[in-house]
Image (cartoon, rainbow, N blue to C red):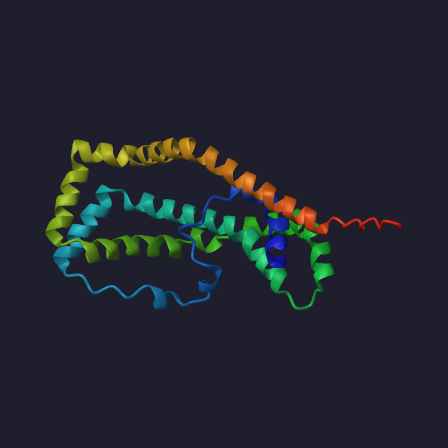
Amino acid sequence: MQIQFKQWMLLAPWFLLAPAFSMAQPLSMQGEAPSAMVPAAAPLDPAQQAAIKDLLAAIDADKHATAIGNSAQMQMKQLVPAILSDALSENKKLTDAQKRAAVPQLRQNALAKLAEQAGQPFTTAQFHQDALQAQRDAYAKYYTTDEVKDLTKFYKSKTGSKFLQVQDQVGSYVLNSLMQKYMPPSVQATREQADKEIELVAKSRTPQKPANKTTK
């Protein structure tokens, strides 16, 4: 409970900027080697390579690679408060009192500095090339050569071109319509529960008045 409170102190100014990290890896997994999580792709035959090359050109895979990097960098920036909070909680050199005293300074100076530097690997040329290769590997893994050719034919069609142009808008429309309906009552319910929890804490810290003794 104490650690959660310390994290709240750090995260409070940032909570409006931090969406759910459903796609973010748990912090405990970030030290694992990439090879342990992503198996090596099997070699592609020439026909498959050519088909995938045409498909990636049709869907503008280079643009997707850039978008992947931007999204990953944003997720990394959003993880900064949690990373800093963990670092402070796990620090062995500071006492609990010193940690509490350090929170305002860290919140004022360190958060912005760390957020600015976070996610730099996702902006490199190497990441961009790896993102392109990941797309090649994914299509090779889940589609046959003929299916890849069918996809390319679709994306080069008028309807396929339209799909590529508006897929982000369609996704945003679906998400926004659901969030507008369900987010306000969800926030309100959580706020009411939070008020109750804080009220319980306040009551537990209120000194109890001694019972009046009756004189005979």
